[in-house]
Length: 79
Image 1 (cartoon, rainbow, N blue to C red):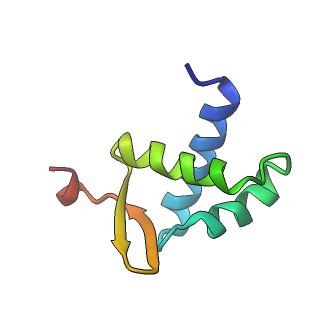
Image 2 (image 1 turned 135 degrees about the vertical axis):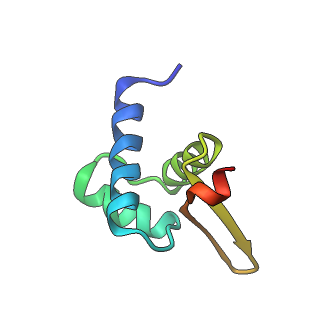
C-alpha cells in the first residue's frame, strides 16, 4: 500500500500535467519535483510515478525510439 506522501506527490504531478499539458518524461517530472518535493530527486521515482498514473488510466505512453514520454489521456483514448 502506498503512503500518503506517494499519493500526494502523484496527485500534484497529475495536477501539473493537467495544467501544463504537453509531453511528460522523467526529466520534466524531476524539474517539477525539485520545486515541489525537494527530497524526491530520483529518476526511478519519477519513472514509477509516471507509470502509476498510466496504469490508473490518466496518462498515455508514447513509446517512440529515443523519445519515450507520456501525455494526458483524452476521453476518446479512454474509451
